[in-house]
Image (cartoon, rainbow, N blue to C red; front, side, top):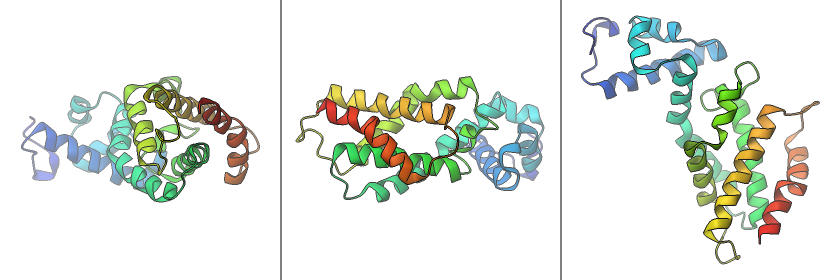
Length: 200
């Protein structure tokens, strides 16, 4: 642990240091948005860039960790949005539309996926184990009686991948002109919704 900087309040543990770096990153994102860099976060903490690099090896890694730290809030908002929707295909489509809307306005979770930051490695992370856990969390929060409607565990894993690959496609190429939420619902109902219905 470094013994200088940190605005005179040196963290006692690596866990505390990481938490303070993430908090400083959120503060910096609030101020600078997509222009946030490790140098900005280091200045906010009054430490050197090398101190931040000890915990996060790149700006993208730091922003990704900040996004993961904020996922709980997004999932809570999705739970409220999806409450009462019991049809599997409707719930999945509404979940996708909701996530797209959240990514467009969320300063932490959505930041890595905006056009000025998106990259092939970031897009590739859509099917990582962490991303799968995120999609499973969304499915688990839906008011859909999956098994009563005939979906098996294997079917749910297929739905997880359908959700992630749909999001991956839409982030990589959202199309022109931009679709409204209602237009996304209509389009996804005939594409992703059809796949969910076919599984049943």
